[in-house]
Image 1 (tube, one colour):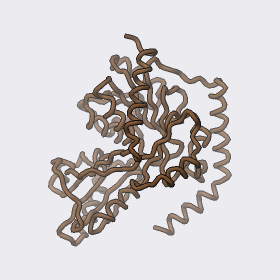
Image 2 (cartoon, one colour):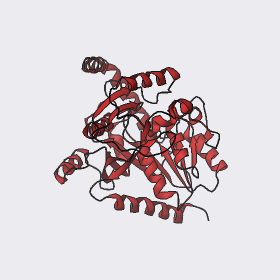
Image 3 (cartoon, helix red, strand yellow):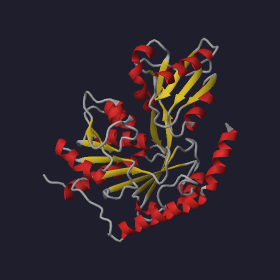
Amino acid sequence: MNFNHSYLRAFRILLFPISLIYYAIVWCRNRLYDARIFHSASFNLPIICVGNLSVGGTGKSPMVEYLVRLLHEAVPVATLSRGYKRKTKGYALANDQTNVLEIGDEPMLFHLKFPDVAVTVGEERLVAIPQLLHDRPKTRVVIMDDAFQHRAVKASMNILLTDCNHLFTRDWYLPTGNLRDEKRSYRRADMIVVTKCDPGMDLQKRDLYRKEIDPLPHQHLFFSSIRYAKPYHIIHKTNHSIGANVEVLLVTGIANPKPLQEFLQKRAAACHQLPFQDHQIFTIDDLKAIIEEFEKIQSRMKIILTTEKDAVRLAKFETIIRDLPFYVIPIEQEFLFNDAGRFNILIKNFIQNFSKTGLPD
């Protein structure tokens, strides 16, 4: 594993000249938008964009879910995602017959958790938003998932996420690094959230991050950590506790499973890992491999554990996994330094102020 990681890192360094070309292309594109040669369209309703500057997991899904929970009981909310790795193209609105192959795992998860919310997908946000408003004309807030770098639509509010362990300030451009947008693009954000922080982060560490990011006067900086809720069975929804006598086979197809691995290593008797590629479309052979790895664990107290995003891609094997101790662990975003109230007020005030000035009666 370490050898493969070192080899990959060395290979990415060799691609440094390509990263310079990539940076030049991104720089030119942004300057064309800044000069309004490329046009950014605005809409007459609040559009909240949740995104990042890099590829990989920074916690966008928990943030989108947090915003939906915060707003959906007060105003009609819709989500718009690209629908990464789905088998369809173009715009789609989730309904009772929708499956994960049609809209992707993250939108499917939103749809299952919030069936009363309009969950949509579309590669071209500029095309998808009018279709969304046609299908759901009562929509009053659109939350765009992973769209910070897509400037064809001008969001009313931009929330930029950056992983505490991989700050954008320390990164480099693809393919040598993970940045897909300019570092200076952080200036377009209204809020910056440093995600996946240690829940015990102290004020001194917080201030060091603030100094490094150097937010502009108008930007609000927040820090958040991941909170894991009690696991539930993938089919039966019954809960299960993870104790020091339980061995876990962790099955993941997400960009960054490390925080979850560390969480389990502190709480379970043992954590055996079976990683798949990000957004893996699980096959029957994958399921057989999972079961085989699970059977190798000698302990009588053992479970299979996966994430909610992976669970929506595994649920199609219901008849096989319903009798297995196959559990799902939910994750939630938790703001540090008692800042949830400040964040909530900023979001709600933004919606209310926009409604007074920008929405028809």
